[in-house]
Image 1: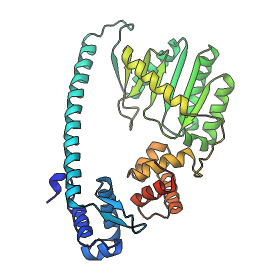
Image 2: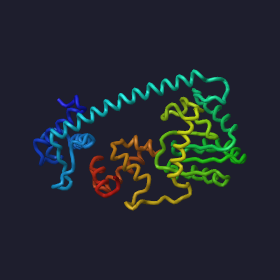
Image 3: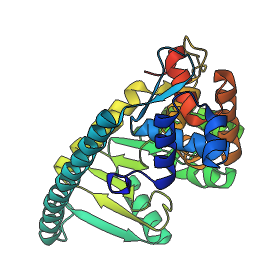
Image 4: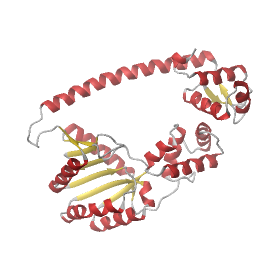
Amino acid sequence: MLTLLGMERQVEAVYRAMLSHPGDGVADLSRRLEMTEEEVRSGLDRLSEMALVRPSHEERGRLRAVSPDIGMEILLTRQQAELAAQQHRIEASRAAAAQLISEYADLRPSVTEPGVEHLVGLDRIRERLDLLQREVKDEVMVLAPDGEQTPENLEAAKPLDESLLGRGIRMRTVYLDSVRNSPHTVAYAEWLSGLGRQARTAPTLPIRLIITDRSTAVIPVNSDDTAAGAVILTGQGTLTALCALFESIWETAKPFGEVTRRSESGLTDTESTALRLLADGFTDEAIAKRLGVSHRTARRVATGLMERLGARSRFEAGVGAVRQGWLD
């Protein structure tokens, strides 16, 4: 009945049962609805995302369903907002497409003109990157969200990195915090630091990005497969935005040699980020990708956080983290 408002049938069943039997807990709802407790908790997580359940002010740890008159208004308002946002995205996409078509149509062989260059295949990408880095005159800025690198890849990168630093090129790189756990990556970063390269780390990074001389940027077409293709951007407006993105991340990132500190709640930056992702409903696989760690490590971090909070579901972890002051 409420599927038109974006509510799945199973979630609707949990919501209706909570309205009819406000005193029921997870176990009671499970028996009444003939669902597993995991299915009930999943329904509660979804209802929480939709703002249709709230923590009870009378009974600590218990959830209560929002009354239907308020709940339906919330769903209708959200649906209207989603429609408006979708319309806005369509209009923005049309404008971006028109701009891209215009820039591409105006491209000339001269490399001094702004535009977009598409690179397909790993060989073509590496050749172009090699050329760009050999032509660089002042600065190279890199966001490296790939996590740990293999010793073979690092060894292959040594000659070019050493050449750039030997020419007095300023090099700044932001890695993921997770690379601090890779001895060979740390050793490589320390070797480069001895040559003058600056490095910092951040819990997560939005994209893989290389900027040379603040005039050329290289980003992958597909973040899941950086070898498939890349785009070289030279438009002034685009470069201004990408340089600002790098600088904002650089300002908040930690110097590579700095000892990892814990917050007042006892969490590292990585744990705080994992907790935010956990509360937002990200899977262990998605958390692993964001942090640049293995699926097993992400699961261990998530499980540890849930145990510290005494939570049995991601929703409960989010509620507990807010109560503890670990999340806003």
